[in-house]
Length: 389
Image (cartoon, rainbow, N blue to C red):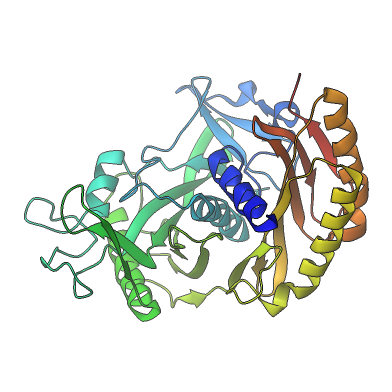
């Protein structure tokens, strides 16, 4: 019975999709109150930047009063059924960017150089009708000898420097999401099959594709020969995985099409509570798993309607960098929501680490009712009540 509840909670998380970013966002957690448009710094083209009181958040670009969205947003090879991977890719790429481009010096801009039509062609298979495809040609095979789709998606992030009312491109970060497993059909509307991609093939293909993408970006108008271009490679999780994928390598091009040596990244995502005999049973998270279980017991003893509690923890080089917890329950009044959220906020510091960003979502079948947020090196949880009866 407990296993069924646990599975149900996972499905509930998936339904949320992209509504909440997994381990943070470019905006502060109180973006409605801390982020404003600097109208005094508009350019003649109607471009402005936001300001924020959160030093860990980027200022962002606004054009003609609207947020400047990516020109290629949402373009993927196929619909990715693993929302954990999607969230890990987006939030992980932003965290990588912060390690290269300081939030105090640079302004964040959604990708404006890769268009949706170009991205669609690049993500397709190479063929006589699509010579720009970065995925290999279809060799006609339908068994393990077929050429899989290696590249799933591309995400571009632009980093600007501001001088008065002018914004100048000072760097580009590209995320390449590489498949670890490719899903395909032998015939239209037929059964779906999966083809595993070895680590060696994924790594080799990722390096080849990264070099080609940088060479193509150098030809795009607005990107100079010496604009720094960073490429971060991400390993997608299979569709049925309960954890998101991880970034595993990155490189940089500072001039022309040459690339620096690839640098390995060590990231691990762990599902809590850890299940015995699964690949998630990482020794790096054993202590956190014990604390999580104790916290879960405390919460369940306090409130009778708790159905389940699950979490995802991300580690960078064995250091916890983020924790996302979802508590699924049922409420019958707004006072229950407030009382329960306040109790969780007071108990969490006794069980959960202070060294990482933590988000706790309290949800019902009607959606998220409360969001608790704690920043790194703080024990104070900010309580936001979202549900209303």
